[in-house]
Image 1 (cartoon, rainbow, N blue to C red):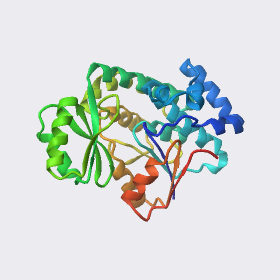
Image 2 (cartoon, helix red, strand yellow):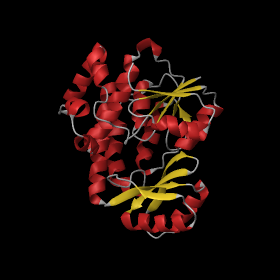
Image 3 (tube, one colour):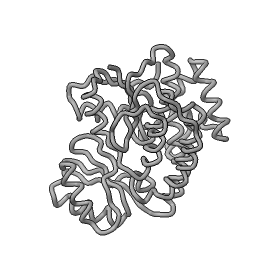
Image 4 (tube, rainbow, N blue to C red):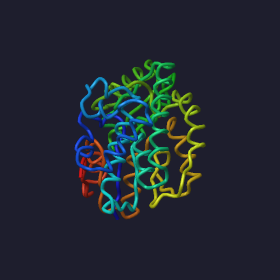
Length: 294
């Protein structure tokens, strides 16, 4: 079975999506529509902006979504997903690619999500850190013993777990995790504590928008971040998407479940090849490719 996966924030690069815009009429049309929906020329920043401009959350999230979804649509009849999933923001790309949400509604939700997350970050100075080389259970245990907010946020692959929380609690956890034998406890250059309880104001803000958007049954199961299980029921997909901002991304478990359910090939659509690398770390035998253009 062919699984398509979609990257999240951090995969962006200047020039992303430009060859699709230049060579595929449908892609050009969708990019132009995106500029209208967003109310600013995101294509200018994507194709020829600076890294700094592209790194703003309000730009990064829609940019990655657009590259992924427009690439899926440009594949036309060749795009035949039998299962999809996305990492964090990528879940929106996975849902639109599988037909659970329209392009317009998906983009508008991603833009609202980016703004809401930005606002939540400004309210609560907070951060994330990558913990390398410890079992998940050890990281969970140490985080739960720290005073303040610090939680596992991204289960990326065995031996790589990203934690998220307040600046003080992250510092305390990093010190304890290093003592416990972590190979690295590296603070990330992110705007705030994504996928933690500190994103509650963003979750509340996004909830109304997600509830108002029309969801349809996707053409294939979408494996969602909150519990790594496959869904086709629009109401359940909606509820899981609302919970996503304050819950961990269970990427390791998503890949394991997709393989257990018969995935024989993974194709990553969008910028970068981060997910391809993580899938290989979950299962060395997995057949993966990453595509950034046709």
